[in-house]
Image (cartoon, rainbow, N blue to C red):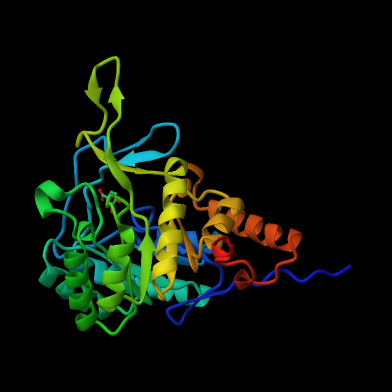
Length: 313
Ligand code: DHB
């Protein structure tokens, strides 16, 4: 008997993804060749490491630990600065185009005007989408309080980037707030084309009990991986009840079942980050195939057959 494989294609802000799995920012998105490798391994879209106005070296080591149930990191937004990033994106575009895998350029800045300036400059390299990272939990001492912690600030950044580029913009929210829905509504109102949720949780701390010292040189860092998945699913679920823009659900997804769960919460696409750190870029092909197998086993032919069904009563 011949069975047709399920249709995994997704439209995200009028950009076509071959499947819903997106390389999350900060994981392997540092060179055009690594982005290409992740795409060849089965990602449906790839996101660059967040880039800011000027080069940054980031925090001293250790910056990332696998603590047993996921990761904790305080990398400190190292990046080559927007001028060098434009070159990386231009090369990545050439490598990704034949694969049909879109490129998401992630940006950050320490001021509203800085976000607009980086967005305008990065747009010249023509990524398919821009992700606005207003939610890094690790750099408050240097760059100030994350804009994602406050609806007014989040909306100001979104509006400024909206005015600076014609590319679709995805605003990445923080779970470290009492009311993520209020922030989601604010950025939608300010012109966001999509929302990504969630960035890392915390900050958290892991102490080496023999030395009695925090392991991260930064002492605290953002928590990610399987331990935060239920929080990410709840955030995605709540945001999807409140806004009309698509949501990229991110947080602890490491297998096909986890991707199904995010889609059932209402996500249009699904970010994968920490699982790549543990399993390498091959996790994308595995999660994609597990998702397709799950769909076949349940008689679903497209993602829209079950997207958001957790909202039904
Ligand atoms: C970093 C940035 C993030 O957005 C995040 O969630 C965690 C870490 C960083 O570069 O330190």
